[in-house]
Length: 154
Image 1 (cartoon, rainbow, N blue to C red):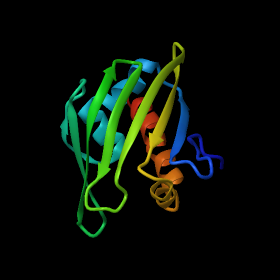
Image 2: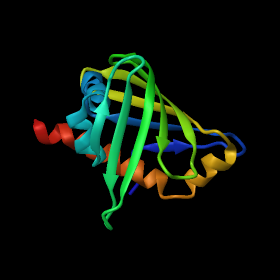
Image 3: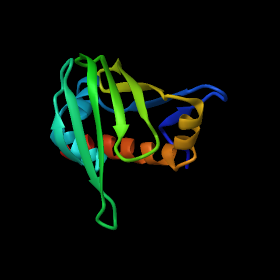
Image 4: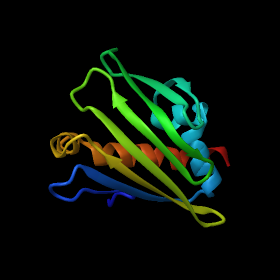
């Protein structure tokens, strides 16, 4: 089955693009990235802090099957409701470094929207290291949960 979330990574570049269309109004898609309770539901993570505003920050924590906790954090640099979020992202205690994420939200119709993520890594090697993981499958699964989170509320 083809994945609905598309990951495009050009050889030799330190960035990638992630795109996905959702059967959701743009306001709900944006809310899924801006409201802690919804983020927890579709990301399967605990939100320790989420300041959805310019110069805000966030901190998430997940627990793996062995009970080990893994932290993620960043700073929000731009926050334009229903349109754009620019933020840094760091997986704590990993070799992956800090990345820049530029999220663009686009309304396609009253009940359809598109997310485009431009992710910039510190180096080509770091980007390629992330892509060597089941990254594309993982983000597709998360986006499926995002879509279903709102479908289940209806």
